[in-house]
Length: 630
Ligand SMILES: *[C@@H]1O[C@H](CO)[C@@H](O)[C@H](O)[C@H]1NC(C)=O
Ligand SMILES: *[C@@H]1O[C@H](CO)[C@@H](O)[C@H](O)[C@H]1NC(C)=O
Ligand SMILES: *[C@@H]1O[C@H](CO)[C@@H](O)[C@H](O)[C@H]1NC(C)=O
Ligand SMILES: *[C@@H]1O[C@H](CO)[C@@H](O)[C@H](O)[C@H]1NC(C)=O
Ligand SMILES: *[C@@H]1O[C@H](CO)[C@@H](O)[C@H](O)[C@H]1NC(C)=O
Ligand SMILES: *[C@@H]1O[C@H](CO)[C@@H](O)[C@H](O)[C@H]1NC(C)=O
Ligand SMILES: *[C@@H]1O[C@H](CO)[C@@H](O)[C@H](O)[C@H]1NC(C)=O
Ligand SMILES: *[C@@H]1O[C@H](CO)[C@@H](O)[C@H](O)[C@H]1NC(C)=O
Ligand SMILES: *[C@@H]1O[C@H](CO)[C@@H](O)[C@H](O)[C@H]1NC(C)=O
Ligand SMILES: *[C@@H]1O[C@H](CO)[C@@H](O)[C@H](O)[C@H]1NC(C)=O
Image (cartoon, rainbow, N blue to C red; front, side):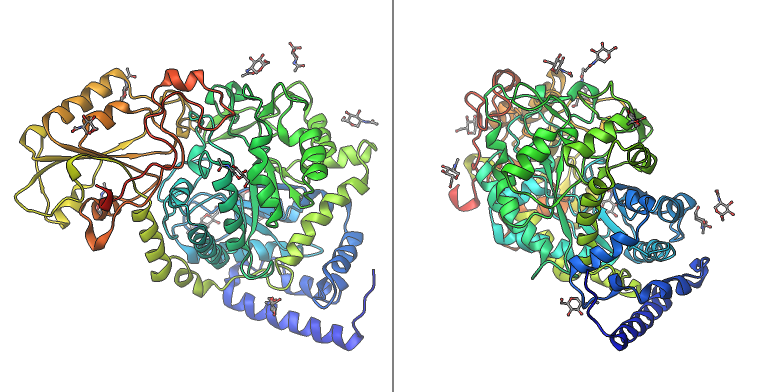
């Protein structure tokens, strides 16, 4: 470690730091949150080399790490969820202060929707203030699951509310436009920066080769090459011009590609532990990850699933040395941060539901043995955990060396220095509302929602509809206020109508449980009752169907019976009506990001690890009409 700057440099640096901190705090943080005399504490570290931005990142990391106690190091290895206070306050709850000042954690994911960017920014600054109250003042890195889709699916996506509302990632994939993906990522990056989110728990580049999987909605579809092309643009957009203080670090997931889940069941749950490769197609799922690594992926998240029948141990990928160290680090050359998916060690409760630790294949290990296995696998950080105690025990009894801990702590600290968090952890509270969903961002998102519609059939060129007040509409799944605003005449039954507009959710079988119920799993077909209900409408009145595909659907009967069939991947009623009526020249431009299978029978007979493998699909990947074609 070399500390080059002169004493007067240091004084200048410290003075600027103090001035900056003072200004930022005075502006951003309400006086009532200064319970800990942070100002004095911060000034104690201002003179230290790791605070000196003129030193190299390696020098700063070296200086900081040798000052850290084992407790302070252990705190870096955990990342878990924080919620904004439910009452709209920006004051930190005690558990948050304890996590930061007692457990020395500095990585958190912001759970839940943000209604007020200003409040979120204020709260975030209070979090950073709490971090500055600690002995070394290591700033917090705040992350988030996707929160820019029109869809609201708890667990892996968060309602967009205040942020720009785009179609889901499948909709971006449907547009097959890398420059649009880059624009999306660039806008989301700026919205994240506004409230202090510096880490994206995405992109999700699993291939949707098993059409039943409940998490297909967050992927870019079934095609490896398309996903590989788009993930590069995605990472570039979150990086900005160069990786630095205007960047959001990305977590590409879920290694080694979690599309091929057995029977389509998700591995959050005990019945979905296995990833299976009946088509012997393990390697194929690495294609997007190779592209991401080449594009400078910063962090990678292995999934819960355990690979069955491969050369790897049959344990969850996050605790799997063959997957993390041999494959990801040694074969694919990834030297960034590996953060496990949430909750591999400790049983917990999510949305009121008991959730056993997802230590699949290692259920019989104790918590401390799981922690040891995760570290020995080569992961750097435990997602959804805060078990500093386990690290202290493992190092305390010489099961894990402190050098091993240091390897991961270095990677995690480097990222903070590169993100510029040590220079300025605070955000401008007064600007937050203005920086989020600007008119320009909103226009881009709304435009993408409309374009991403995928027109599957359009018999007798029924679309676009001409606007005519005499035409009577029967509608389902549409807010009637929107129809009234357009002076569309709405009637109560299909029998009275000239045309029907029906917006459907793709079929699924509801699951119980507070958390599980948000996972759309099971059959891709509508049940007999629902098919009969819909058929009665289709046989009564020419019907335009729009289906929200959060995963593929097996709906040959709708293709047959409806006058027109469209798909969306998260789009508002307004967007739908604009496209249906061709308002402002809008027309569907999406191409299917996956095959739509013929039946559940075809799905069950296919290999879940092989793309485009169901017999005689109704529509193929890439299908999509536009109005000119009709
Ligand atoms: C909101 O909750 C926080 C944390 O529980 C509490 O400190 C604060 O006083 C509450 N504020 C209001 C306005 O109720
Ligand atoms: C939170 O911490 C404050 C200050 O230490 C204490 O007075 C208060 O009782 C705590 N509140 C809860 C709900 O534990
Ligand atoms: C994907 O890209 C590879 C390499 O460019 C090429 O060989 C392959 O044919 C492509 N596959 C598809 C399905 O387009
Ligand atoms: C952000 O980084 C740029 C370029 O590296 C630098 O010029 C600028 O001073 C940095 N800003 C802060 C607040 O550190
Ligand atoms: C996973 O695979 C193992 C081994 O084939 C099998 O015993 C088990 O039933 C499968 N499914 C689950 C949910 O564990
Ligand atoms: C875990 O322990 C149970 C009960 O002792 C045993 O039946 C099971 O085979 C063990 N599982 C593994 C993966 O070792
Ligand atoms: C250290 O503690 C862990 C957990 O109690 C235990 O599994 C391990 O055997 C211990 N190792 C030594 C060397 O005592
Ligand atoms: C219907 O749309 C109106 C106007 O945008 C909105 O105020 C209302 O909350 C919506 N109703 C529902 C049930 O979403
Ligand atoms: C059939 O599907 C409909 C709509 O998806 C649902 O409301 C109904 O409960 C289902 N019926 C059965 C018997 O599963
Ligand atoms: C729409 O066209 C397809 C293909 O020509 C045909 O099979 C189907 O019966 C038509 N549906 C309606 C409702 O006209």
